[in-house]
Length: 367
Image 1 (cartoon, helix red, strand yellow):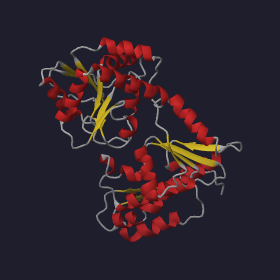
Image 2 (cartoon, rainbow, N blue to C red; image 1 turned 90 degrees about the vertical axis):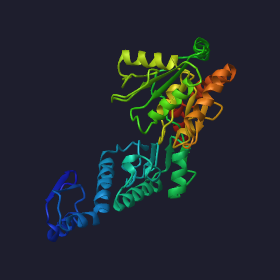
Image 3 (cartoon, one colour; image 1 turned 120 degrees about the vertical axis):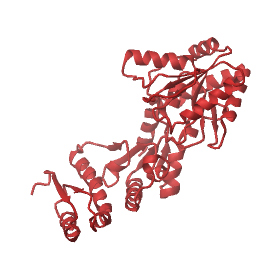
Image 4 (tube, rainbow, N blue to C red; image 1 turned 90 degrees about the horizontal axis):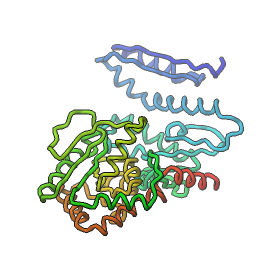
């Protein structure tokens, strides 16, 4: 049979425990490899779920194999590098071409870190770790957006440190601002008002309620405060000093103008996130010279340099800890200006896609 033809095999099942194992094996043992295998179980109450679970590792590997075989078929002969925005597509890829992937986390780092990576079945954990290790061994060069992710690759999977490189993602925002522009922006907002900007769709994980508590601590010190919130689509019960602007799209002129206004008017970018692989918005804030105030978690510490471009706090820190630091900077405008300018320089030197692309190509050219 022509191996270019992809066959999807669907096995419907309900309480077929005495037959399902033989059915699964009849598919998995086929010599024809271009197969997509789907099992649709209707909520079986017999031994069927346990038997399916027994073979899930092989079924998941079959999906990774499908990715790999499809890539192999489509690779032009003159390709020099296979570059993937993730580890799974190249985990089982067989080619003499050099293989590279670029991402912001490993499976091990995500496990029990994000909510959708908690309470995973044993088979899912085994398969996830196995495929991650295959990708790290199979690829010639591995780029991570943060030291947090790179450390996981080396420590959790024994990846070769010589292959692992840290290249921060760049801001997804157009920026023609100069340092002179940032100085003018700083001068225009050196007044008694403390404008805080929070951006994040996931209100709970990003620490939205905590951000409100921080702003309230500042207000309790008789300092005028405003908290602008961008991202959450739900209705939030907020105090008078806070406003939820909802989701603002960068794809529209009006959306871009509104975001520019909010970033320009803010004194600090505040995101006390509880879990964060990276956080592109920190790069975008830096392009406006906004010091970042956030938590020491995930990839955030690659983006914010304490007392240089902002400050990160332990997850155990209180709202008062954040507020006291912000108030200190409000009372010391020279230090605030230095932070702002350093944040903008960090954007120009490290946190933009032009720099990321050039850095990646310099490493690739050495392969």
